Amino acid sequence: MALFLGLDSSTQSLSALVVDTDSGRVVLDKSLNYGSALPEYHSPHGFLENADPAVKHSDPLMWVEALDRLFESIRASGFDLGSIAGVSGAGQQHGSVYLKTPLASVTWTTKSKLAEQLRPLLSRPTAPIWMDSSTGADCAAIAEAVGGDGVVTRISGSRATPRFTGPQIRKFARTEPAAYAATAEIHLVSSFIAGVLAGASAPIDFGDGAGMNLLDLAALRWSEPLLAATAPGLAAKLRAPVASTTRVGEIAPYFVERYGFRRGTPVIAFTGDNPSSLVGMGAALPGTAVASLGTSDTIFAAMREPKTDPRGFGHVFGNPAGGFMCLICFSNGSLAREAVAERVKLDWPAFERAILAETEPGNGGNLMLPYFVPEITPRIAKPDVRLFGTPDFVAWRAPALAARAIVEAQALAMRRYSDWIGETPRTLLATGGAAKNRGILRVLADVFQAEVRTLAVANSSALGGALRAAAAVEGRSFADLFAPFCAPGPERTTPNAKVTSVYAELGARYAEEMTKLGC
Ligand code: XUL
Image (cartoon, rainbow, N blue to C red; front, side):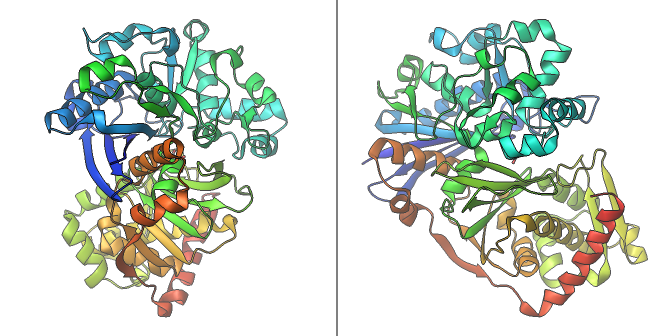
């Protein structure tokens, strides 16, 4: 038996998944939802309330409390964590944690919980996360300092982007200079969780590091001009970035004594949830695109060569399997689908039926601009929901039309804003909670004119962590690991070629409305 653990510290939950590379089976898959399991952190959706909708922070103590709670429940279930041969994982991208004391100089004691031990180490009590859009001025300043957004994009693979960590660091240094000066170490969520597990100052990997507007993608090191444009003394607060297969340490004695991990269990660098998903979906080689339908929707794919988005919405990240990947992120993912379902009072089975049986492709011309929260792609600063079409639809009196409208708008946005990748995917692998909904898969297949497949394992990001740990520790090739763990399920949603013109027309109308908004 060779067991590898993958963790995924995401916006709303922490998941743990264990693969057995001998039998080719997933032997454990467990999650803990922050909102329901840790109500004392006042984060029903994984982040703290703030009067300013542009500000989205989380409590990093909640993330480590979740680690304790999840390991506790795994151990209580009778699973032997001592059988794990290696650990890796992923974190929601871009979020950052600020510490007064480097993790390498701390020894966790089993006398108290991790969260209590971590509290005095924080130089900033909260962590800005990827949903934060409050750094527009910092993005502009960074771009200006280095000679424009074209330069930022050429160096880092993305233009200066509000949720990216560099602009977030700049805002912190500008608004709380004393706390910034007291910061010894800055982590991404991924390197923070890896560092807590290993009791080490775990470095940031190329996959997640590329989401900071700080990494020089060609040289794979922090960019001097971007560091200088971001904040004073920043280089000293970051460790040099590493490849995603790097061993960052071994599991800290705290986890050995408390949860029964084997002493010496290697911890492999963590990466961002999307790069990790690319591996977990078996899509680390070019040719297949992934649509990840979660709190945010993302579309991503391995890239033959690094290309950048002329519209400035898409990103290039490191591919944990080597090379690069592209990604486009939409913040109105499940948040918008849930908002519509709630408003027209449809439960998920009814929502699915509405799309599959009660409405037609093109939705009779009823179109929704679905920006229930500030949008990242395209950039919409304030929530903005608009309905165009028949009177009942426009008055929210047509639940089935509303269900199809939100899903069609999201799929059209995915198609429009991923066109720069230049390769129309023949297969789209769908993952995330909403990939269970056949109505959504049908719309994706028809809009992209691609076959849509899903994988047996829903948590592709944690699976990617487990597979990366196996690849690093056992020296196995990814191709070898993909065969048993990432084969798509038998179900195929094949595109209906007859609706190509319907979506060409609806896509043109969507584009027209977006052009009016300057997007
Ligand atoms: C990607 C992004 C989101 C988060 C979600 O750029 O911001 O997909 O990674 O966890």
